Length: 109
Image (cartoon, rainbow, N blue to C red; front, side, top):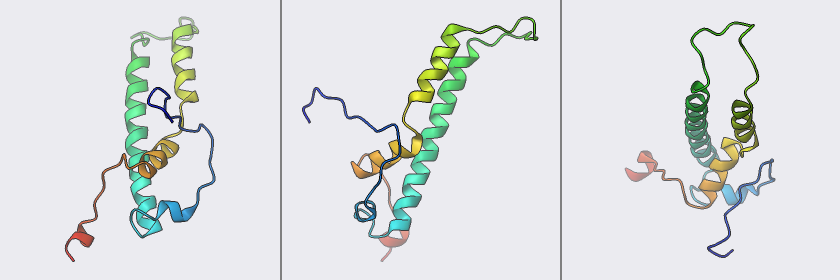
């Protein structure tokens, strides 16, 4: 892949070789915990970002008569729906050495 091509993270589930996941830690469970924690961080960041963008459209006195569809708001929501899921991003980051992790119990030995 050249530098001009963008690295693409799949939008759907991908079958993975478990041996690929435990290469970095020598323990599949430790790898899964690292990926899960990173996925939680990503999900939290995306959620905050989405809420801050949608907050721009909130009005202080919403009632059923005043609520209407806002095209910009719908496009923002659709954009976030099309994004790769946090777990897929976390797995990609883990496999491409973009996640920093350490295990203090292993360091003490």
